[in-house]
Image (cartoon, rainbow, N blue to C red):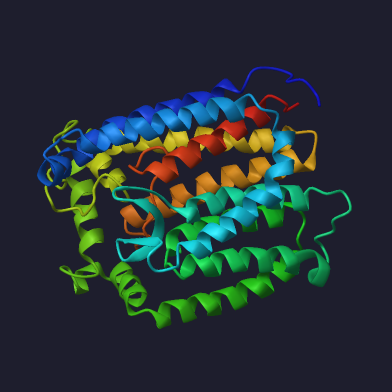
Length: 365
């Protein structure tokens, strides 16, 4: 096992820590009103976020200093465990329903989302599988179909909860890995057409998904129903202007934007810090993604490269979907903004994954 060639990429570490600090500030600002109203404590959400950030930073330090090759031996057991958890969460009496989805395991207000673990479990397994020298993904039946069947099985279990947002992020990151591994474009386009038909079926099968699509196209057609979240988000972003209303001065967090500390935290950030603040956050994400892809292209082995591609793609897809929803370019899916939004499982797992990316950067050429 080779020794690290150098310290972790500082241009990866800086945006990670900067986004985490910004997230802490915004979780307090966006969630203070809701925390005081529901729990009698303005610091309720930020205190819990600090707890999970501490756990996540500890995990990030560990994974950043553990050779990534060690992860190969955990690829299969981790994926099997993730599938078991996804099945358990669907069992009444075991899985906990929150926000209309049976996607949690836990007690009281503390819990974990197995679907969050599946994102990283799938990335790790695919990196190990696709990274084998003898594996040829350019063939359809023996190459492309097996990993897609595995990805589709995980996606189906996540959709049974249902959790379209997390499932889409997992699927998008995994598909990017498959494409990077050398899958033929004609195979992917053919399956993409089938996937589009399947997605249309999922939308048609659940009225609330169809409502989200129509609300995305014309939110003012149902301003107090399906279009409410998008409209209130735009009402927050608009007044922010160039420099914002000032930190802590958001008006939309006063029971207008639902759960402003989670999925729609960027709209509160844009309201308080304006276009400049929003651009700064997006710039930090772009630096993180750029440096991550540079690491992926500079690693000496396929396993490490595919692992880096998967982690960076997970971040990129999640950012694109979250920002797209907040500014009205995508239907509402329920996706958090990495490192910024409130959330225990998502924050801890994201920091753990980014720790792996930092470790990979130590071996890049």
